[in-house]
Length: 133
Image (tube, rainbow, N blue to C red; front, side, top):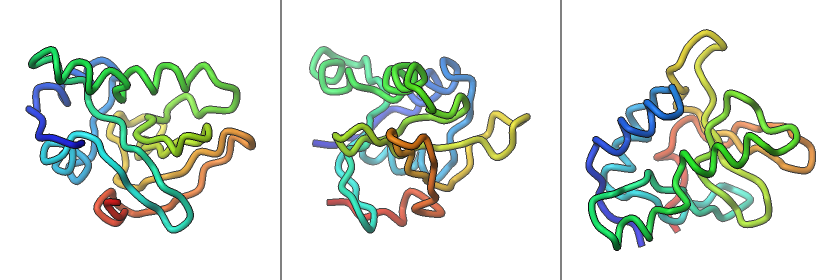
């Protein structure tokens, strides 16, 4: 179940991953930290930001964006500059990518990363285009 998030936990993750999340993504996550999403072809679980405000939130956010991104970067063909934001439970991820190779600002665009091929495909221009399921 998604719940509101203090922006300080987003800032901590930005510092950890050395990126800046897009404003639309941050706004959604501040309102609901995680939860279900759907693209045209698949259902996804949005990773939360790690919320350390109390024991219950720590346990509910233990599969956070920072951890899941670090784990995914060990996989063959996962883009080195991608940030994992959701999983379909079958090995694929929704990811955010930087605006450019020299920029730490992540684009608003949402991509599917396919674990079997290593390819990415744009599925939305912004997070709010995806359906909450």
